[in-house]
Image 1 (tube, protein in one colour):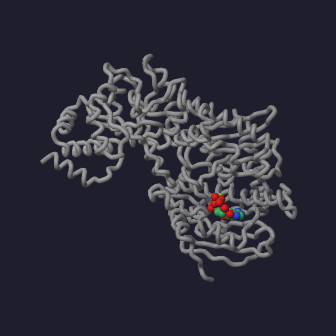
Image 2: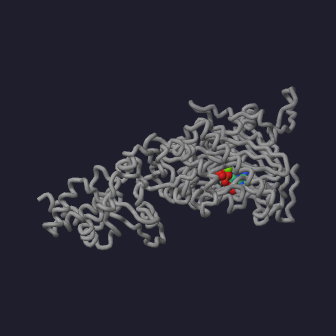
Length: 617
Ligand code: ADP
Ligand code: MG
């Protein structure tokens, strides 16, 4: 029979599994059992909406059968089974294609990251088996099919005999090698250990035959259920270790990292629910993309009714993983109805409060961990401040961190404000590409000279979030590039501007609409020139807005500020008086310098370099 090829990505993945140096090969069993459990869940779901399907819990189980003589390990489930097409599509192709392209080769070498993260669980079977045979009969189908593969060079599919609906996976266990005793996976005690370790809370019984007779000649066996089937969230918190939670997190494929924090909530009042929530450390690979789906698993009294209930989490906490189980929710509730469910709304509100206070505790008690969290998900919190017209800003403002010019590390707004000298009117911030670049911005000179702290904003969303906040503890935010910095200086600059009015008007004309004004700078100390803005739109915002797909070509009102104490200004004045052509040259040079400092593109770089040459000659 002709062999079919694996889809290219699957093939690579499979090769990695086969050659895996992964040290915990035993997880193959966890993966296969979890698939079996999923398959039974699927019948369960079907029964919820299809009256022709009934679900009697007692008929559903998973069975693990080792056979030392034949060197096989068989995993049987009474789940929904697979049709011929499903065998082909589910086992011949990676479910989420593109996942390999995303991860670098190096990260994949060990195989650890991918197991689970991308739903490649089934291939884990090839870590321990030379041949994998899957016999399956789908619910409602008359025929059964056998899928078989010896590895990366392909697989075969043909009809086969199988009475019961469900799936049977037969692993031909590898011969022992130098590094691995594969015999282990045929040992009853070892298999039990692995099941207990990884699959204890699986809701369906995982059965194994146990020899009951000591009589060598007679094989009396009895079926035994290995897993306790009590879900972890119904267990007492005191009985559970951090490791148990981490195991649950991994088993559930919530993430492949170690969660930073877990919350185990049991509420027994007007609303009753149990929840286990996790705050991950690492960003899921698709987190900041449209593909990412937020949500928590939703159970009704121990039975999964939805795997991603998005109504339980607001967008700003979309990174939270975990599950909620409430006996007050109806099993048959539809997605549409859930949205309006009062219980669910209460649970959601309750959960969000707990997540917030957990994050606040973390910030207070374990700054290092919080910063690791913030590095991953801080952007999301800032979006949260900005979106919905700032409806959640109060809720989130104390969770924000920004880099401080003085502390040289991330600080909270509260820390900033509590350090403000009495005469300081505003919370100052500066925007730019990186902390290093911002630190060199001429606009920061005056504020920094005053000894005031400046928050460095380096992310696109930052300034939008700050603008949405408007104030923190009654202190207004102020960009160091904005018109009035609220810092008293010894002399009146408006007078200066008046004094040089003719010169500045001439410069404005030369720049023909590129700037809305030319002024004496209050903030420059050592630099000759900088740009500032009038009005609400800052230069940083202009950059962000114009990078958006349907940009409205929004422009900031740019002001060219001139440092009249700088040597260059003398030349400028002289040129105005004696040489109009030179004035034009100098004005353009200064303007382009200001653009460069700001990280803005120069309209005509060739002209700019020619201008520099003219000055040099
Ligand atoms: P995942 O479980 O994350 O989807 P797997 O690689 O573990 O990824 O499984 C791939 C797919 O194969 C599953 O989504 C499921 O559709 C199908 N599958 C695997 N094992 C079984 C099984 N025992 N019964 C029914 N379908 C299965
Ligand atoms: Mg799986």
